[in-house]
Amino acid sequence: MASFTLLYDLIRWEEKAIVDAAKKKGVQANLVDARELTLEATGKSKGIPDHLVLERCVSHYRNIHATATLESLGHRVVNNFQSANISSDKLFGSLALARAGIPTPRTFVAFTEEAALKSLEELGYPAVIKPVVGSWGRLSALLKDSDFATAILEDREYMYPMYQVYYLQEFVKRPPRDIRSFVVGDQTVAAIYRLSASDWRTNTARGGKAEPCPITPELNELSLRSARAVEGEIVGVDLMESPDGLVVHEVNSTTEFKNTVPATGVDIPGLMVDYLVSLEKR
Image (cartoon, rainbow, N blue to C red; front, side, top):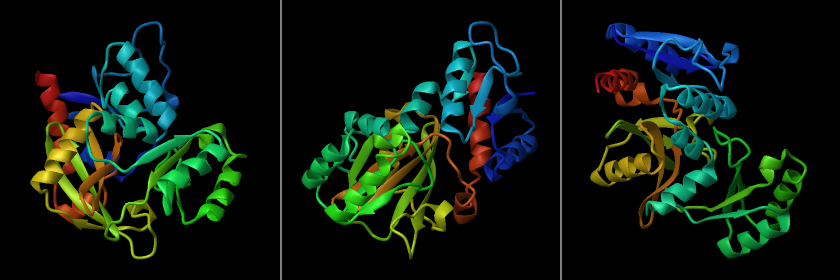
């Protein structure tokens, strides 16, 4: 029987759906809680029953450190350390997209309040500030003018040092929605519009509504190129409809899809399991 280890630190709808899909396909999904995992980093693998590991930790730090250790111990991890590390940091992701020539919003990085304000003067208002590590739109803010920006930056000067890496991005003129596409292997398998009537952030975790989005040739090409740019195998790609066409602003390595499956009817967890099984056959 084909098998893989699902490494997690929180059982969400997605992890349950992956396990259920594996059962239906006669594949053994062995659950391992990263919070209880001990690995001898300089020794041999213990605690992981399979060569193939699907990394699904919510915690950024558990994700990248567990992945790095497991790969060093000889495991095949999806997504790999390089992909997880790049896509879990917004700045690293922006750099990878830019290197690959993928259209992405104009982005600045600064390391002091003064430098951030100078960057915003060049970038122009409104602009967006985001933490380099974070999800669900938390601690992201729409900076409407310099007074508002100064107030936000002053607060961040007293936060954890990571929040003093000022990731500043142009506010793309777009419809009140963005697009999340899903790449599994070498296919764009599904896409949704994420709409919000009350917030500039469209994250479905914040109440954004999911609607099916057609996979156009442009969307397919950019999704696959973006996945390759971060060396991702199973990723979510976030795009916006700018006046000049689609732009990619983020790639996610541990993607949620509980709203996408009912919106599109696409069996994403089943396709994930199929892909993992295909890796074992290579």
